[in-house]
Length: 359
Image 1 (tube, helix red, strand yellow):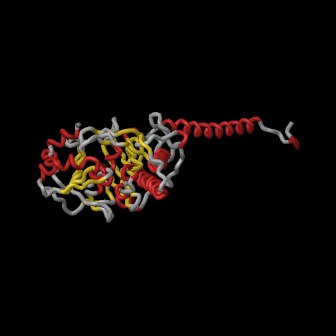
Image 2 (cartoon, rainbow, N blue to C red):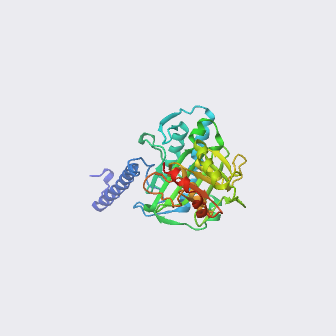
């Protein structure tokens, strides 16, 4: 008998039990979903349970929201890059050798930036594929929440949501572009980058310069916060190339465009793309073309490709082929980037560079 003479109704007890079971079910299913999402990247850990930016079954994602999170991720990663560099404790090591035989360096700046960028994006969009330059350890997992705020400059350019199927999206993260220059304290070349590709096509890109705190972003067919310069020199262009093989490009460039051609040796693919644009950064050099002649990874170039495409520019292999941002993580055919020029005419001018790019 219940105390104080209170009678318990069998119906009330049943309702109470059902409510209790319902609460336990939702708590358990939410916990289980969070655990399962840790394996959402082909064996790489993800960043926690599903957030409001994507439905539980994959559903759709809003590219405008993805742009907002990508900008935030690039800035957060850049904060880590800057903090580590200013501490002067880089914990530098080599991941191996590049195809050219140079050390493929990694620092604490790469690792900590990667962690912030990856988990911010993965927590906000747990159902999309994320490819990143650095490995993400399960032991380092974080749930980094987005406050759901879209910056005013993005809202001004992109007034309405832009939804696409989550399964069509691939995100490419470069947590620290120009690591070699970073270790040499050549700070102007360093960027953090995020790119979103839909069905393999670059749709939105973010390039952030941590040491000048400048961020360029764009979404194809919808808007950007950066623009092309007023003019470009197509006859005797300034060509920005990698510091590691500037001589290789210079020889062919002089043969193609003449002795007045200027070669700018620079580090970082993000920096080189920004060299083609109207960037309000005094440390940023200006170029008319960007040429790369060796193998390059897609996280190095996807963001720049998206920004150039949004502004009417082009980034292709040296033979003029469009680059697909699915499948393998690199391209063999070299790289040519231009804006406000006849891109295919430039491709035809560089037949010998195409052969070099496949070596």
